[in-house]
Amino acid sequence: MGCSAPGDTVLAFATSALSPAGALLPRRVTRLFSNITQEWLVLRACGADPAAIDLTVTPGHRFLCPDGAFRRIDDILATDGEVVPCELL
Image 1 (cartoon, rainbow, N blue to C red):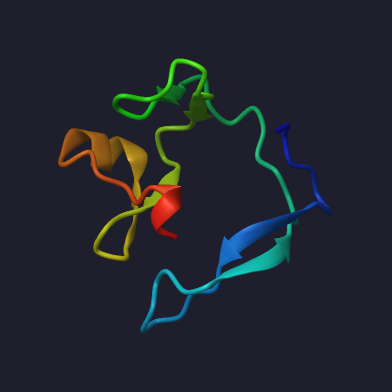
Image 2: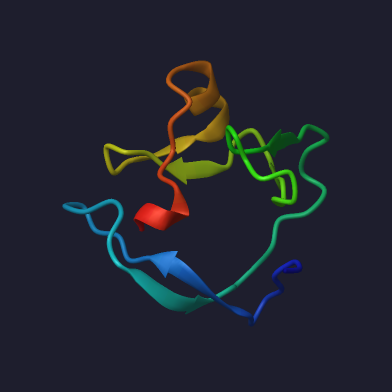
């Protein structure tokens, strides 16, 4: 798996006011953010297979939480530390 680029197709959540995390739909990448931070978080699942790939994100990256809301990863890690695993999507 590599980096995405504008024009690539990725899966994205269809959102609405009533359902912050709707169905996953194919969408095109419209832009990338680069050189806006010097701070990174490297995430690894608890008990992950040693061959598993780490995920590197910015502290402000938003993740889907069990309550259906998207929250900043730095806030999640400072509180309950729970996100929705991809197996549950």
